[in-house]
Image (cartoon, rainbow, N blue to C red; front, side, top):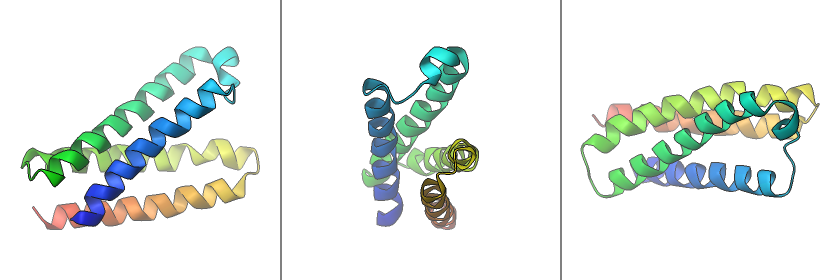
Length: 118
């Protein structure tokens, strides 16, 4: 369970950090070209990150509801890790696509570990 908790916390923090840096540094041109679509996308990403963080902390604290939230957060993360790479694939950024695949595999491992411990 230790892997799952720290994976959730780390990925939750990384999602928040990546988007914060990208937005502050002006690396998201969609702010000007597709602000509404981006707002919905950011809401989903930040809600996923928050769910990962809260479930990871709850699992560390031994809260029973942490598993349920963790399974939910894992599903949200899987969706993001399947949909978001399309943006980078369209731009030919294959290294990032590989990173998303690795994260998806780790998320699936986390999901099944969490599921097995119920």
